Image 1 (cartoon, rainbow, N blue to C red):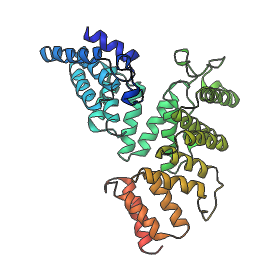
Image 2: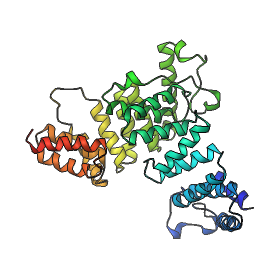
Image 3: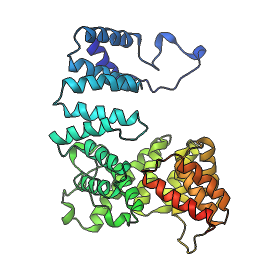
Image 4: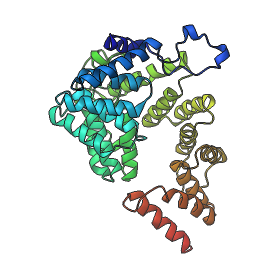
Length: 366
């Protein structure tokens, strides 16, 4: 009974429903959180697990229920128990690792890395584990290895796989960090597969990328982007969808469309720091390169300052505002931004060395 109740909640529960004032809520028909029957089932399942703690299925279901309720620490504890008991379950091990990453603000902790390595030991093609192992390498400072891993993953992924846009973004970020041309190092994915065709229609001919013309590949990519654009036209409230569309247009080199997409995100979430930074970045990417660098336009710096006001530790805003201050000769202001930024890194981080060099140059008057 507890397992059944939690299974139903996992499928139809709505813990993400926005909170409402108590006076406006019908407590008898409340759907914004777990029903009392589900909470009772959780308590019952916990009692059963106290009596039979060697039940991996029970711990797995409890962990997934906690994920649905946004209770990450309890989810991690339950999934840790489940993976210890079900050592051969790679799906469960991958879910455990991903839950650890989510609870660590996107940084891959050592326990998660070990979990993903365990998945790859049994299934070297597991996309989730491959992505996060590469992310761990990137966060550890080995950007070249991370780039190579993400490139291999993208080249072996169907074009309509849900993780493809995220992998493209990571390849672009790693390439820029390594001073490489993102377009030159980003491989083409495999043709879409029917199993993943919900996101975008598959092309009529399932040709290998090597046999597809440049026009066919371009049409395939644009078909997926157009599909996302159509979904956003039907539901423009999806802020994260607009950001994804902006990144996709950026990869295609369509800067004006990227700016328009992120402008739509900004209209719907004007105070979100990540949206404001994305908006400023889109504005900057649309500018021609100049030597020496030109000052940033006011609309970009205004968005960055607003992002920093909402999140005083926003690394992108601190870095870019520091660059702009250097460009216009405000060295003291640049030092203030970058001093705040370097405090977020340790001496072993590659970013720390870069910032230290920049700060020392500013102190020396150069």
